[in-house]
Image (cartoon, rainbow, N blue to C red; front, top):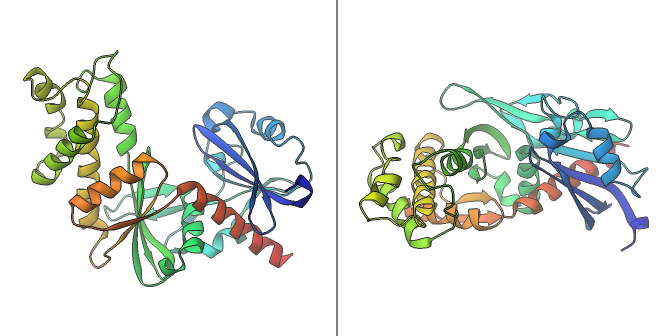
Amino acid sequence: MSAATAAFIAGDWGTSHLRLLLCAADGALLETRQGPGAAAARGRFAAVFDELAAGWQGLPALLSGMVGSTFGWQEAAYLHCPQGLSGLAGQLLEVRPGVHIVPGLMCSNMLGAPDVMRGEETQLLGALALEPALKQGRQLLCMPGTHTKWVSLHEGAVQQFLTVPTGELFRMLCDHSVLVRDRDTPVEHHPDDFARGLEQAVHQAGVPVLHQLFQARSLRLGGQLTALGAPAWTSGLLIGADVGGALPLLDGRESTVTLIATGPLAALYAQALQRHGRPSRCIAGEDASLAGLAGIHRQRSARA
């Protein structure tokens, strides 16, 4: 396809990464460009966007993610839950003519605390488009990542969600602690050690994960865990604790958990869910983002 068939620009602009997509009117992907995330683009969002979108001038753009945060291009509103995702298209923030940012979502989570998301709401909208069955009844979704999101849907509307900094905690332990590894030890996935950590999380579900983390070091000192296997063991423990803690908080009647994820992380969460007795299905996160932004574009075009 040529750029002449392009209809809009879709942007997934997270904290550490920007994925800018040239799309046809039906949402078909024509071209992808990569750029710096919101943290690196701070103070120069317009320049970064213009440089990356060179040759695509004149097309409307829809951006989601941390580009709409307090350190983004401009702060976009949070829509309060319960919230139907079809309402996102009517609450866009225009940062300049033709360039709009998708609002985030805010809720009072099941712990009674405020919780927020930016970017995931667009993936949720896309997931509903890709899997229409998610619009029916109660559904439980998991969106693994640096800050994992557990989301409760009812008839396609977001009721509540819970953010768990599983990925961030793992990375901090690996990079800034002596518990998991020495500085020169690579962070690799070792399936058997991941399964051991996951098994511990299941069998000691009543023990707070804080009371188990030191074993990443003591098991190594005792010769029961290799230096190379310790990061995978820790990952299994943390993901197992994440899944085991979230299910009783959000669950009740839903059976299959829908994962919105890409790559190995999806498989790790699927394994943890299976170990907790729950089947899962997966929607690729990049596919969900594109489908969500394409859906918003169609809604806006229909109103024009």
